[in-house]
Amino acid sequence: MTYKLDAFQDMVEAFKLFPGIGTKTAERMAIFLLKSPLNKTQQFAQTLVTSKTRIRPCLECYLFTEEEICSICQDEKRDRGLICVIEEAKDALMIEKSVSFHGLYHVLMGKLSPLDGVGPENLKVESLLERVRKLKVREVILATGTDVEGEATALYLGELLEEENISVTRIAYGLPVGMGLDYADELTLARALEARRAL
Ligand SMILES: [Zn+2]
Image (tube, rainbow, N blue to C red):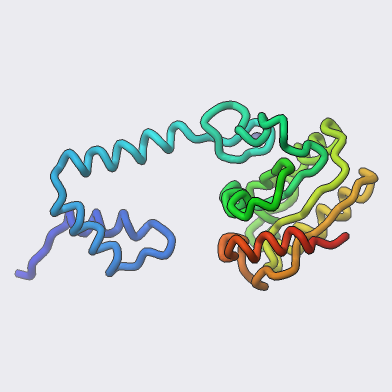
């Protein structure tokens, strides 16, 4: 009979659910927990559950927040005439680190992907138009990824926003082609924002 440890295997499989975690790393993490006191593991699991239940999408821009409206939407010093459109809430974390943007965000909650059945009706497009009108926005920066779907999404939004009589710009310069925003470093993102161009 071979040595089997099903519970350990369950832990490894759980860690492998995380992006970028392979079997070897997952095993190291599981072994670390095995060697830790039980209360440390309980604390760890509790922190994940507590944080996860406290975080939800902002009712205005869909960024992560612990309140109804996120701290960026609430901040009176942010430029309300400028909206940066991003695919995922995590993209704002990167842009905020670059400290080169002082407007508001709008999270699309995805990107156009006809092959996966994702059309405009599956994204936060309607609420973007509502916000542009309500806030009397003068510029929308399209900061979707530079991969095929990200470009297609920017193009679609650009055409849609044309009727709103506002400036529509697209970040481009310095971003790695074919990748999501999360692969860029802070400086690259700062330059990409500075060098945005009209669509
Ligand atoms: Zn918000």
